[in-house]
Length: 262
Ligand code: 23J
Ligand code: MN
Image 1: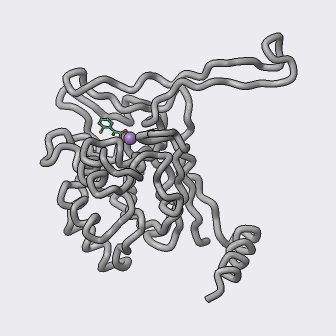
Image 2: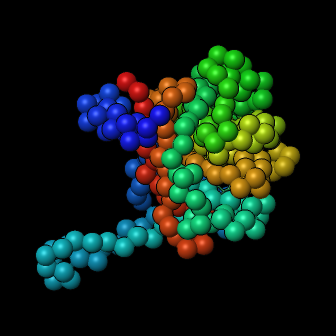
Image 3: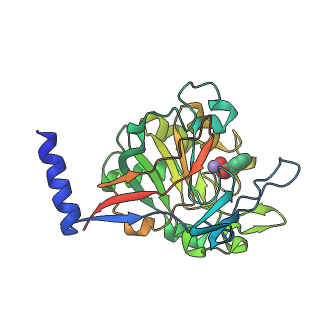
């Protein structure tokens, strides 16, 4: 098949609206919820700040611009292998070294919104993934797998988004076995609507933070705080998520987009 024709068809479909562009990104600003780590686990990412340089004034009469103070892992963001100790030695594991081909890939969306709404500690299991595959088709090597929970509907309220009590955060995510299974299928990454790619209970899992530990150990990627996964089909969309080319970066806010059928 001629790829020139494929791209011409895609161009027409984009122009006609037959292929939709879905924004999977949360608004990024001082109100964006950030992960909170208890002090005994480690230091936290600082609040997001927007500093004005000028706004058509004495500091710059004809122009407006700002400088940003924000952590790499803020808002809708990409986790590079170098983010985790298990992935630290990959020469292509930082944001500036990841092959760009990996920023555009097919996407599988596993809808467990009902389960996660009923139980915020919901964990996606291997059995549940296999049931999804029976219904929608096998998860292909090179594809993303995203967990739809409708968690993004909690919006920019940190309290609702982090959903913590005295026992820690309560938010859905994968079991360690589920991540191992997805790696065995050859997926390129794992993404979630929650503040991180792991469940709120993940510090107590074996290994701790399995989505981070195991995916990055396999030189694969993560996406967190995704939105609008309810706008995507289970299969058939294409995800575009490219981190900034930070030199040596461990992750980066992204504008995550999907090309989806109508
Ligand atoms: C640092 C420590 C633990 C976690 C995280 C970061 C994230 O979720 C992240 O943003 O990658 S769980
Ligand atoms: Mn992260």
